[in-house]
Amino acid sequence: MTSQFTNLFFVLFTIITSNCLRIPTSSNKMMLTQTSSLITPSQDNIAVLGKAAKFAVLAGSTTTNAGVTSIEGSVGVSPGTAIAGTAVKINNGEFHSGDPVSLEAQKDLTTTYNNLANAKGGADMTGKGLGGLTLFPGIYHFSSSCFLSSGILTLDAKGDSNAKWVFQIGSTLITGVNTQIKMLNNGSALNVYWTVGSSATIADKTKMVGNIIAYASISFGNFATLEGRALARVGAVTMLSNTIEVK
Image 1 (cartoon, helix red, strand yellow):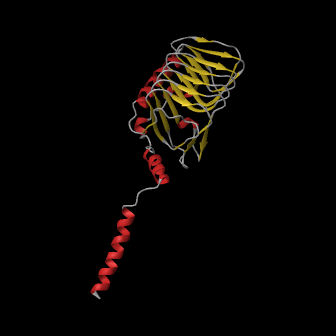
Image 2 (tube, helix red, strand yellow):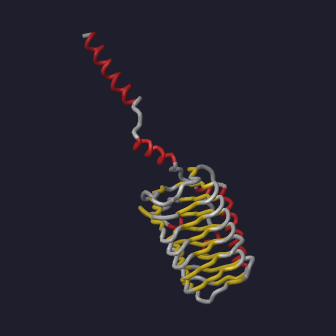
């Protein structure tokens, strides 16, 4: 009886030990890498846009447009006053040129920018392109430039309509022609924040989503679209037959 018990104990010990010491396969390693980046920003670190939220386009120096651009939301400039280009069609919004409304919006935008840029945690994505990736809610940090050079970036909310993505970009945000971003599983474009240390360049026919908050300027190529907001703190927002919608 004692011998049978000893043998049974030895078998169970061998099974448990072998499972605990099993070396992960390459697919398991990839899953661990993805899971480690799923750090959801706390609500305290995600500043609301305040009075900047009503603007689909807000610039520091000027806005310019060529071709016919359609905007859902307001267009503003402060401390500059120039809103150049006549073929801008806005719905459910107003023009604010160097007035108190755009001034207050810029103040709130600065607060939002600083809070987002200094949010802690997340995954270091420096040197990695965004094309072909699927990213879950979280903070993604780029010490210099961020590129969506080709293909599709998918943002998967995993069923959470309040899920947020924060991209902390040290210098420039650049997309390639015909690139796009897709939202999955109840995600909202307005919960995506691109905090850009200098300028954002959105290429021709890019299908962009999110709030682009650039320290300097934002420029759109021909027929590029944005579901979200283009908000520049000190520079210009340049448009070229675009569609920009806050929805």
